[in-house]
Image 1 (cartoon, rainbow, N blue to C red):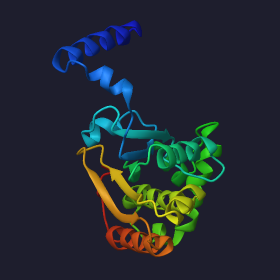
Image 2: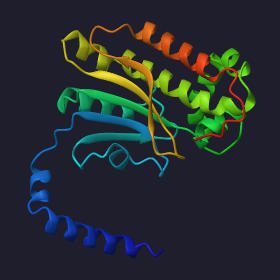
Image 3: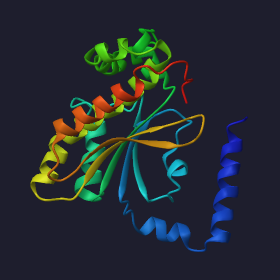
Length: 224
């Protein structure tokens, strides 16, 4: 498809929205007041607004390869800080997806290029949970690592100075861990939600234990 077609489609879309909802863009330009922040994978098959049925302006989005959050990534943490401190979002969702190519590369030790340096963070997750993954059937490991990676990144968000400072001043913001199924289009709550007054380590440990219980002994389930 020629790239100019995208511009033509944009104009057609804007005209249709303006006809259906007069004043929509003028209102959107005046304010940004999302209740939600989405930290997801860069995968083009996982669009935050469409998946959640939210309108433009209702979700603040940061994406990178394999939905990783690390203290050295000032890009991600700056987005989190802006969302929490300025936009005053109420929920931060870390969202992975089954069949993630970055997670698969980390699990199998596949070389993909420059991104190998970034995916060392996911390899670290696999190494920390090596006993859990090795106890599973081979076909269950990728799904399990996708889940464990999300849980690990929820922990990182919750441990960040941004969230710790927000909770210290009594701000009601909660961090959640979800995973998306490409085959069925459904979001799954991984049972790790950490908010004001919550115990980060207890929530992390319980969610990891739930993955072990759910995945060990699973056989031949295709990645969603």
